[in-house]
Image (cartoon, rainbow, N blue to C red; front, side, top):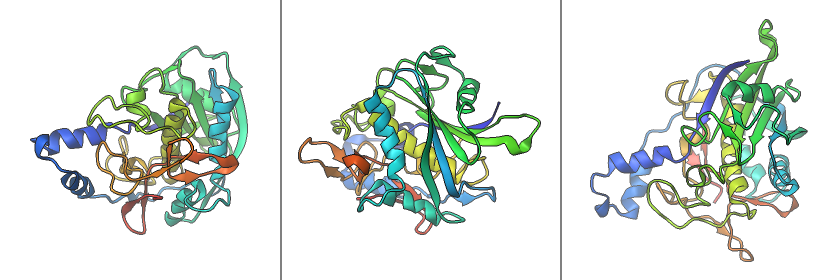
Length: 310
């Protein structure tokens, strides 16, 4: 049973900013675009609710067909959050969470559930996502549903690239509330919306796509969206944590920093990031098993600004 959910859609804010704030784009310069983007007020207010702090288990529910390599890319990302890799790393990116109220959130990989035969079909509603999330242990955890490229989810590509929210395992027991998140593989449905900057954008400036660090545009896009909803889940799990704007459509820890991956970012340009000399792939964070990832900026309560790794 679902009680709330928060959508994440990464391109729309940047597109609207360009369309409405620049009456004549032909006169826009890089400097003007960057200045315009940075001038937007950015304060995430704390709404006095509980956050997910301390030890938090991340359980993964794989719905549909994912190869072992695809699963390992995402599982390695979760495990990298608590690794000791030298910065810039996944762990150093996640450390910004410590600046939110009540200290650190230590994410560890827990149970992985495979539903390769799509037990609920290949077209899912929001309530079915919560049902799937409840299939893994719910106490002290975030249960993440990952849907395959051929699975359609209500709102996917139309209004979001991922969501997080809360549900209850027993409607009569308020203590049975749990946090969940969902991300879908956008490769066949909307790579230009939910796998940017690894794919040519559907809207806005047509800048060349970056090379995906793990060689999988869909899964590397999923990782950006997963990073976004995990940060939102931890800092605003029950719609009364940190956010800006209405609780029904909030800007949260990472969604408030849409489209920013490196220094100098502006709408349509991800910013200055690192390049793997061997593959030409773009990244800004290292993880376990030699993995590299491109992670979005996160709002830092200490500076009230979007913080990038590079």
